[in-house]
Each structure stands twice: as structure tokens, then as C-alpha cells.
Length: 250
View 1 (cartoon, one colour):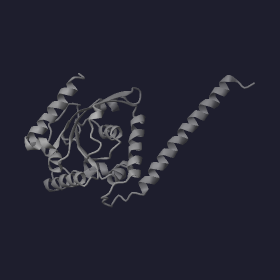
View 2: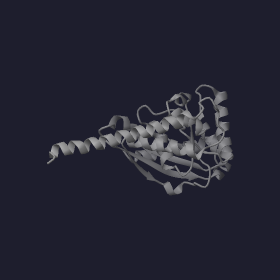
View 3: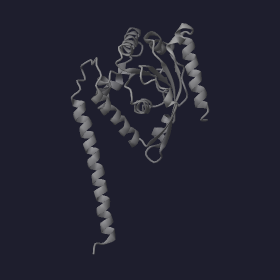
View 4: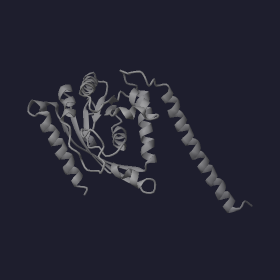
């Protein structure tokens, strides 16, 4: 008769072996797919396959990061149109969550150039039409904004941007840069205002504690607003709306 302890160890070893094998298969898949992406090429069209693989990678990172995501306002999202998504920015997980939750459409984020050098993620970003926004270079900033407008108008992707321009270092919101809202104005597309809460604590909680992340889609503003409001006014309104929503969690 097999010793119960020995049998338990065998079963446990099999489970661990299967888990490790599954991890290796996933990473091998992402590495192989990644190698098919030319990191020097400027892509101009989207790919459902690469977008699926990228969102799957986001999903994996969320599971590995032990995230429990709570979403409100999902029914407000106009998935039949391209849009500009704006939100506060506390963590690199912000756009992971947003892309995963809104995976029915493809969102390309505007990001700092350094992020395009990240292993695996950097190439996926390039293939997903993500746009680099250099700092302290007004000419390149304008080019990036114009490219984002073009992508929306040409129905290639929706665009995501963090109007603070950088991640918050202490979890508190920074001022918004109104120029980010020019994309929605010039592209004449819906503007989605989103609030992110809980991503700032992920690195502090991991791996022992699960992080609860709250993604609240607060309002979808119709393009007709630009006939009445200036970008500064809309920027201030979005900032106030998000800040008030975040304060409800305190």
C-alpha cells in the first residue's frame, strides 16, 4: 500500500510540474510571437492576432500581480466608435487593466519612449500602434498628437492617454495637461473619462496580499461639446470629476 504522505507528495509534484510547464509554454509563445515583430519598423495597420496576444499578456500580468478588478460604467462605452480614453495614472498596471477590461476594442496608448525598450512589452506596443511622447520636445509632441488624431479618424484604433503626463509618485493626482484633450477635439470622437483606484498599492501588496483595483468609467462626452467648451475647460472638468470620484474611496 502506498504511503499517504508519499502519494500526496507525488500529486503535489505533478501539480507543480504542470504549472511550471504551462508557464514555460506561455512565455515561449510570447517570446516567439515577439520575435516576429520588427522593432525598427513603424507599423501603420493593426493586427487582431497581435492584439489578442498582447491583451493575453496583460491578463497574465494581472493574474501574476494578484489583481481583483471592479468595474463600473462599462455599459457607457461606445464600442461601435473610436474614442479617446483619459484617466489618472498611478501605476504601470493602469493601462494593463484598461486594455483588458475594454478588450472588445483596440486601444493604443501614448507612452514615454523608454517603455518601447521593455522586453516583450515594447515590441507589442510598437505592433499595437502605441505612440511615443518625448518630453521637452514640443515639435515631436505635436507630431504624436497629430498621429493619434489620424489613427482615430482613420478608424485604426482608439487612443488612451494619461493627461498628468507621468505616474503619480504618491498616489495623489497631478494637474492635467489640457493639450491631451486636443486629440478628442480634433478627431471629433467621444471622450471617455475614467478613474483608476488601487493600482498604486499593487507593488506594496504583492505577492502576499491581493490588490483590489477599481476602474470607474465616469462619463462619455459627446464630440458636440467642443462647440461650447475649450480644451482647458474640459480638462479641468475631467480632473475634477476623477478627483471627486477618488475621494469617495477615502
